Image 1 (cartoon, rainbow, N blue to C red):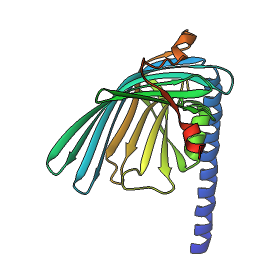
Image 2 (cartoon, rainbow, N blue to C red):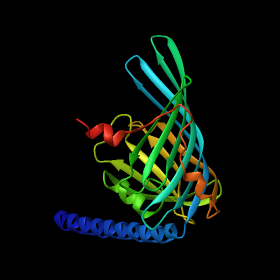
Image 3 (cartoon, rainbow, N blue to C red):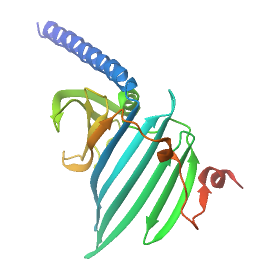
Image 4 (cartoon, helix red, strand yellow):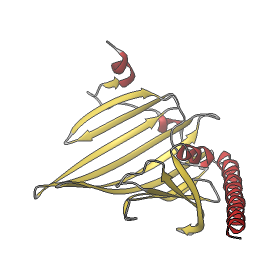
Length: 242
């Protein structure tokens, strides 16, 4: 009798898991169709995070704005202007470091200009893959590559209905055991990501605000011009030269 009951429970569990998997796959197909309709996107970016070690801790905040539009079916152009403020604490001392960054992807190269303590530096690298615009099923499939993805109950974020996905790393760490992604049901854009540690404490957050979809963005926004006196280093050339 016990053996029969166990078989029934296992069978029901397998059916349930197949149903959940089918629902997830169906949602991914839906998000893929929605994402194809997105030709351009612009938004304000807000991010914060914390980390700690023995006698050491760090917190950071990032604020900025992002503009992106499709160059073709497989490539995006993107412009990201941001400011990061990092606070380091160790042995009773606290240090604040501000870094300004401009990142421009023209569909072929990614250019990065940073300024810290008044010193500017710039480099570029070849873009082999589509830049991470954090949208559609391709984004989630990338997440699935190293995580088990679970579907959670839907939720509204700033009035936007969202699918909620829980990504559990196959090799979790104390600092990162779960990431929750909130994908807009209307546009398939990931508008919020929350990183939780092993104690389910929020240790990282990325949030998109003032989102604008399919508005015109001038091509000039994706042309990088280095400031006077700043030389652009080619990191791929540096990496392969003897």
